[in-house]
Length: 195
Ligand code: GLN
Image (cartoon, rainbow, N blue to C red):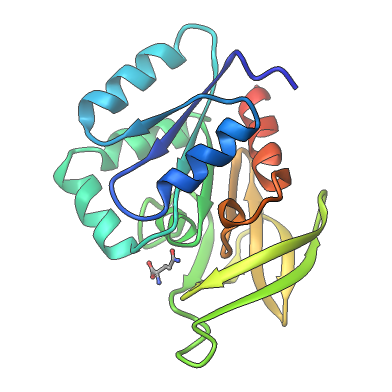
């Protein structure tokens, strides 16, 4: 795929953002790290010029990430951009950020730190709709407890929803950026490209 017209931002306030940037780089996509309001404004200004655009919200600590986006005045602009149709990929804490208690752009209810202490971190290989068997790394992961009508469930592991899509919003409880498998990011990039 030619991603030269795809403009991707990676929220880089906290957490595992560099790994996302590296994975995008592997796919030939140069992304922009968002560290403050100015970075976001520059990104949005460039997105208006006929570029397909998307935002990655990485894993990390959702409580901290939420506080920082509020402090930087990024909460409303990010929410509006997603509501306005910007593609978004939320992984782990990034998934939590999209739920009803945080940005509220996805119609999902999420349980944080859902696997308890003993299963704090684990790996699995499991089916993702539209992709196939996919390596999944979970780190103090959430899962999705319930979804609304407009949400397509993409993967269910041990009776828990671990990946879902709502329009151009793609979310997973695991960390595709920590594997060598680029297919989840390619799915996100295809959402960036569609109107
Ligand atoms: N436990 C974190 C949270 O609740 C998420 C963990 C992760 O992103 N790896 O925000």
